[in-house]
Each structure stands twice: as C-alpha cells, then as structure tokens.
Image: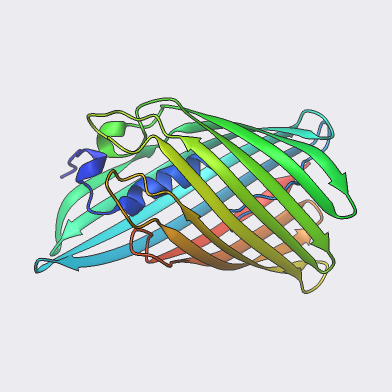
Length: 266
C-alpha cells in the first residue's frame, strides 16, 4: 500500500540531495560537475539517463534502508554559438523501509528544470561559463517528489583542456524555496565540485568526479559529499553512451548509486 509522507519524515537527507542535484546540475553524464561546452547555434542534444541508489542506516536497534530510482530526459538547444537553453524532465521513485517494513513508497514526475548556459570566455584551452536555472514545482511535495515551490540557481563553470586531459570545476548557489509544511528545508544552499576526463582513445574517456553540497536538512552539521568513477564511449561523433558508479563519502550521501545514460546530437 502506497503511503504519502512529508519529505522531512524520510530518514535520509540523501533523498533531498537527489532532488537538489537533479534540479540544478546537468553535466555530461555520468558526471555531476558540468563543463563549459555548448552545442552551437541551431544544434540539438537529447540526453537520457537513469540512476539507481541504495542506502542503509542503523540506529536505536532499527535498520533503515532506502532505494532511489531516477530517469530523466534533457533537451538542449543551441540558441547561439555561445548560449544553450535546456529543459529537463525527471521521474523519481523512492522506497524507505524500517526492519523490512515499508514506511514510504512514492513515485512520479519531479520538478521541471529550465536552464541556460552562457560561455563568456575561451582562450588557450581555458573557458568560463555561467549557468542560471529555475525549477517549476511540478513534483508532488507531499510524496517527496518536489520542493512545492519555484526554486532558482546560478553556477559558475570553468574548464581547462590539455589533451588528453580536461578538468572542470563548478561553484554554485541554489535558492531552495520549499513548502514549509511538507519539505521545510534550508533555503540557501551551495555546491562545489571538480571533475576530470582522460581520453584513452578518440572514442573512450575515463571520468572522475568529487563534490560536496550544503545539507538541506535544517540543523544538520554534516554535508553530503560524493565521488564518481565512470566511462563515456562515443559510438559516433554524435552518439555516446556512458556508465559509472557514485559512492557517498559522508553519511548524508547515498551509499552507492549506479549510473547509465546515452546522448544524441543533431
């Protein structure tokens, strides 16, 4: 039997972090850290990705387990040679159990995200971009699938390319407006992350990612931090597939998440 519960009654702050990351950062999957690359005027990119995460905690003799499945489709359009516009629609399923008994089971569409990425500087392999974003409260906050309010964000992105390496860094601010009854999270959040790519060949890249965000749970003293290791394989210049594993470095982050996706450009 499905039961709707407030987000804050979930035993894992990681659930909230999933919503934050899904709503504000859309990088070359499986990375969370974005790069400064843009599509070019008139070009289109479609990205489809999926994630499956598991977490387990024990306290006061009770074992709590969480599983989170996510699928998302992103459509990016090159408005100019230096400006991209993107729309992302995510679907999320969460399940929480305590000693094997289900205490929360919810699934549905999460909050729609609209973003723009403006590359404003590029020289000698170094480039900078700004990425503002806004979410529409399309997810059901009573089931933990959205914030219940319109949120916004702004990210500063840098990329340095020295073949066969590319290194990306993100600093971001998220204005996490949310429903005080069902969500009741911190409103001012920050994000910091760094990623690296190494090209083994023209088709295959190994990628790694480290990052941390402000914990949205009020009163929390430990922030979620993660590490990702993955690969991106170019079947053609305009079609690539990817996969990876994300591990939580700190307790508020999900223990392990499997990542997979595909990207098509035309």
